[in-house]
Length: 439
Image (tube, rainbow, N blue to C red; front, top):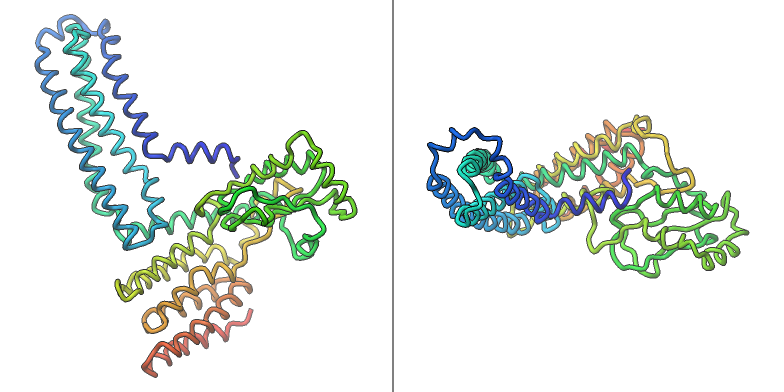
């Protein structure tokens, strides 16, 4: 569990221009600092090296790196467009955050600026003979970095923007989000059970001031507010929830959930000069789009969107949908593990209560759209039932119940969509195996 400011710092570092600017600064610094290293070079070494050799190297670097940078940007834009059209627009964010692409563009831009500054400095007489020798050595090192980067870039281009590669990125992002929730199932807080949920109307709601999706919750900040005002705080808007000015982010209860103190608590918070309410609202990051980090359901929904797009008449790619179903089992298997509670860490914020993610809803995020859009394709329906069967067999009772419900829904859709009785019989047989599982 990381604080909100650390998350924003990580998000800032993922912007493409940040790495490009950093490498550009390093390139300029390398060209200018070469003269500072000149006194450490023996006088005999530069005698065999003229400034024309350095000039030629830098001219080649300047002209080629500008062309390569422009070409790489065009390839990157084309990959984003392909991913948006063939996979999902929600997946392009992962491509934008791809470290390999960012490093490649940053190296190319930094090398261009290094050579440009070096040429200007040479023409102004900034370097002595020993300084030109240092610049030559640095230029040789830059060439080595460029060659290594281009080899990586060539290999990376063979996969960038492809359906399988982009789907794998979404799977990895979803896996990371699920892994976080397995370790901290309540984001570091305590489980909000049904008894406490029934008390929501008697608490003090804290409503959002923005309209958008909850992208991240800093539970540690909520805990500090709870200790400050001596109250329990119930989170009611999990990451991925669409909130507006009339929707509560959290509900505050007086100490030990004493509803009788709520009126006085409301008055105290309204007159509070410490900004507890603003701090509490600030613990909820509300953005225009959903985020993968604390929202496994978003990743599952994007996986389902990839499958639905593949099943559309314009694409007609059942293989991608079947691939997504296979990945779904890999993603959800750790979540439905009967021993999953033993993997969770002890809650650190005991005055913050967070509702649990429902397994049935997670199943619905990925399986319901595929069952709907693949109702008339036997291969998809068979793989869907087999995926649910696998999760029911390896999972806990909650997973078995969710698998059974979605199996019945998918079976009903396939009965209406499939035309051959033999295909329907195969689907019915697998659905019967799911129904026979008793947990």
